[in-house]
Every structure is written in structure tokens, then in C-alpha cells.
Length: 162
Image 1 (cartoon, helix red, strand yellow):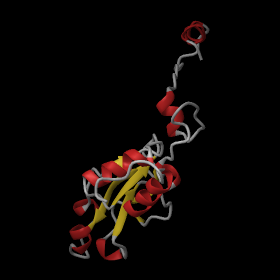
Image 2 (spheres, one colour):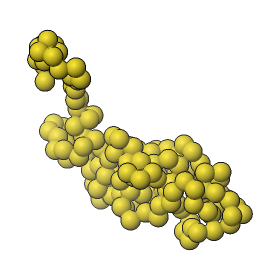
Image 3 (cartoon, helix red, strand yellow):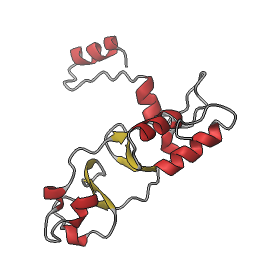
Image 4 (tube, one colour):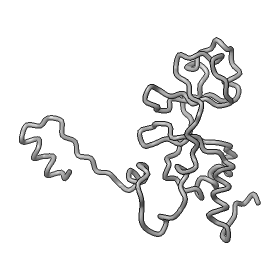
């Protein structure tokens, strides 16, 4: 709604009036169609694997049987992750005590091209994809990104590692 409409609602007695002005990034984060020169660029949201092992705060490490576990709350918001040595901790240890509380996450609208370069530069094997509200969308694997990158750039530039 416009600023004028929001102010008018307040003068009519509505106490909780909010003006939400969505931008292009918010539009793309919602997975909605875009136009323009880069509209055809593949995005990582289409590559993210939704079937990711998840766990909760309060859960014990011994209950987890995976090489990665994304710690989520009851609505799927990413709170942390467990991988590597964290999963080798005392089986009675709580997820809360050994998790990485700030895993890097990426939005679904990030281009495959940009992600391929990011993963190569940072030597990342996999990253988490979340929506604009922090909810888990899925797991993105480097091999899937590189495959999609090469398919979309068959006659164009390639990654430096080749």
C-alpha cells in the first residue's frame, strides 16, 4: 500500500498499520519470474536438494546418523549445522553445545555462475540455501553447481580450475 494509504488508515483508528515496500531482491527471493538481460540465468534454488537431514536443539548427537545435520526450529528456520568433528562428539552431547551456530546460507536467487565461482574460491563442497525468512530450502552441492554452470556456459567461459 502507499504511504498515503497507510497514514489514512492510522487516522481512521487502525493502530497496527505497516507499509511494506518490496524490492527486486525480495521478489527474486520469493522465486517469482524476472525479466531483463539476466532473466534466463540459472539460479541455485532450482538445484538445492530439499531432502536434508535436520535435527533440533535439545537432541543428542548419538541420535544423528548423517554426515551433515541442519539444526532447525519448529518452522524450519536454520539455527545452525553439524558436520565433521561436531558429529563425532560425545554421543550424549546436546546439539546446542556442539553445533556451528552461524552457517553460511544463500538465497535461491543467487546465480549458478556466481555460486560456482564462490564455491571454487572458498573450496566449498556444499552450502545451505534458505528463503528470505531463514527457512531451510535445501542443500546445494558443488558438483551440481559445476554441472549446471557448464551446461549453461557450454560455449562460453569456464572455471579457472579447468
